[in-house]
Length: 443
Image (cartoon, rainbow, N blue to C red; front, side, top):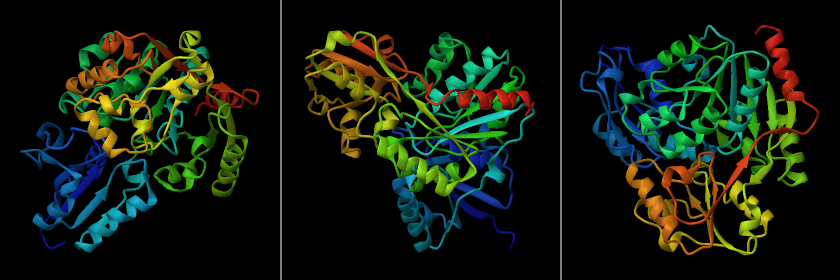
């Protein structure tokens, strides 16, 4: 070092980026983080990572700029390092970003787990995946239920989703639906928190994960990490469980950091075996054995239920699916389509001609989305646009296939049915026995 601070940009999507900063850069005087860049999630650029979170070296905070400005930021600030800090992107995508940074003279870094995982005083089970929408949240709920029936007190630590007020997002605890209402959660947060809360599980989340862990440890026997997208755990785990999706067989080799998760997994869960093709399930199993032969392989089903299937038989329906699964998760369909087909609907309504506001941009950004509507709701205005789009789309009924009940949230006027899905083991109770062994050994 010559005494000159190394200038750094952290590329992110309001989650891993802030955690990497907090763990590695916040108090390093030899480095200056000149900006975060933001992508994947709408409306998170243009803000400031506040000084209350950034620490003493950043009395004015740190600007958060759209990723489209990355090259300009590197040039204007003579940046030395760019740290890639978000998930659920292809290996090719990551290397294109690396090539851009290297061409401009900057180092391109991926921070490893040992530098970014927090130690905990309670046992930790992490549930990660190889792609968004593989079903890790369902696996988390299943494991939490097992632990409760065993007389333990699990607390779920959710990947941070600070898409609104960053200072208020420092630490969040959800023990009731009233807590969700007080926090003015986004739809994505509701999709993750609400099913756990309804099952009687306390959920923690937030930006300052050291504080999140400290608070969660005060009321938990066991911590359950439920990772966002296909991110790596923020906590040093005693048992690493990774979920794979045979509807996207082969993605376990080609997406970051999903392949890393697979290579680290102690338990590899092939989910959705009830709806995926047998050949795809077999292919995923072969890939696990090739990539991580020491992993125990467990198969699970995710049976889908409709609360009134007969009411949509022969009808034209608008299907509203989980947003991240359709958008950066890349899925052309979700549980709603599968449920509607099984119920015998006649037609899927196309919402694109009736999309309001920012939802038009969502369809432009993700052209693979067919006659479906992703449940976008990252602001109050976007929630209103979602409701307006649903109400404007001609259809006989709406199929709500998000983990959060949008009927309650949006107060829809149209007839609607709700899709739910829970995890079932398909080969005895291998996952249950694994968790019992984990608890029994006192890990």
